[in-house]
Amino acid sequence: MEPGEYLAVFSAGAYGFTMSSQYNARPRAAEVIVDGDRASLVRQRETYADLIALEI
Image 1 (cartoon, helix red, strand yellow):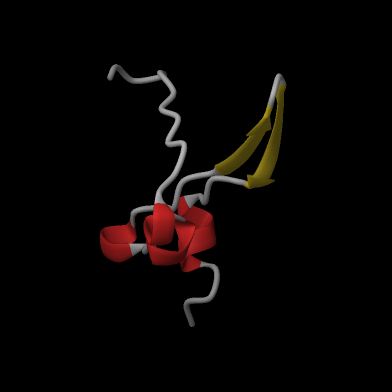
Image 2 (cartoon, rainbow, N blue to C red):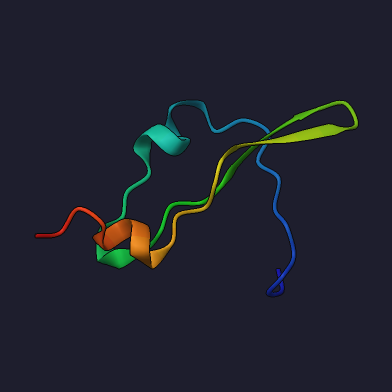
C-alpha cells in the first residue's frame, strides 16, 4: 500500500471498531458502509484534537 490509497476490509468479525483503541495517540479510522455503488460515511476519522478533547 502507498500513502493515499484505500483499503477495504469486508469483514473483521469481532475485531472492527469495537476492538480499536487510541493507544500511543493513534486516532481511530473512519468507518464507511458500502452498499452496491453507494458509500456512506458512518464515523469520521478521529483527529488529534479529538484524542485530547477530554483531557483536563
